[in-house]
Image (tube, rainbow, N blue to C red; front, side):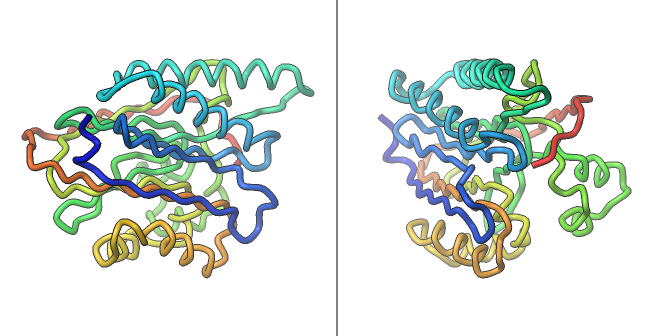
Length: 263
């Protein structure tokens, strides 16, 4: 088992506005897998959707050994998507039961990011923060088209409108990015309750200046102090292996044409 080569810490909080915590997280460090799922506020049973994702991935972690096959993770998320669609069909018309998802997976000297929605994965390498995921959201499309700046996107009226989520559409469209895993790399998985109130530069300073064990609590306390209007979830993973493998990260992003979703 290679879990001695990495350490992780995770925490979630209801925030300052929500009545329930629709976020859920997974710290399956024994098989090198971590996940944050953010249930869709404004729709019914967002907490059911996020928890279903975590339960399916936890069962996968319990039945497998490191390294996990990325296809098995995708199959589990597709199964959850189908189950949520069936559950929604039993409720009144137009009901959506959905959740964002981001999964971080270690496989020897590679790291995989699998996601749908606007929860994020960041990598800190040599004190430089890089976002490895791209939000599936209306404002992200506007930023990419040059119609909004990144700063304007954070406060745009459509900032909570996402275009992909587990359970939201009959077919689940997941994005995957694979990159080299190098000694000293650190990763942050978070729901948007964090990045809506903290800038990337602030997050970078927190990651550089604090220990892994204290980081989730410090980040969440900061978000709460800034009156975060959503649930806040944080997972931190430090990779400590002395073995590395070169390569380039050249993700091929794609965007679907599905209707926007309100969270």
